Image (tube, rainbow, N blue to C red; front, top):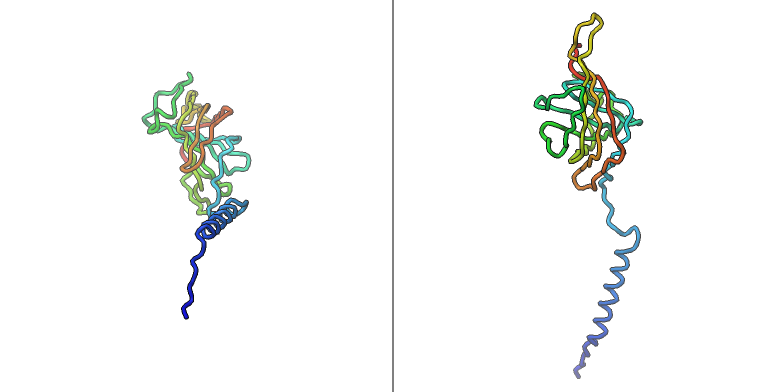
Length: 191
């Protein structure tokens, strides 16, 4: 005697498939069900600075209150002539001459710039946000005098950044809202 097997009803199979698909979609959309990334989020610059300093031909920087965020503005030797009159530069048009960026450090560095001494304790920035647009206004004062009244290679420089956009690969841009001013002594000094 042979037993005849009956085939399952195709409508029931389709219904079970849809139920399974629905449960899978609900589980995937539930809070906390997204795959977790081991990668820490990239910190965003706050763009609030206090302590300013400088060196070199024109290299200025300023630190945030916690000392972990630095704005850096530098011009290379091919820069336009600067004077006590304000010179306005477009960040997007001078990428080889003008460098404006924000360095973010894991912990406050001791002396991140303008030194030849490496104590081995400071690591470089963990993230660098580069300005891709905006304006930089620069004025420089006359060369400063030393204690004996002789002209030095040092002078005061003042930089004002306005409307800069800072970018980091894979992250939403950070647009500067408030004007940022940095004023410091720059130039070369022996020692």
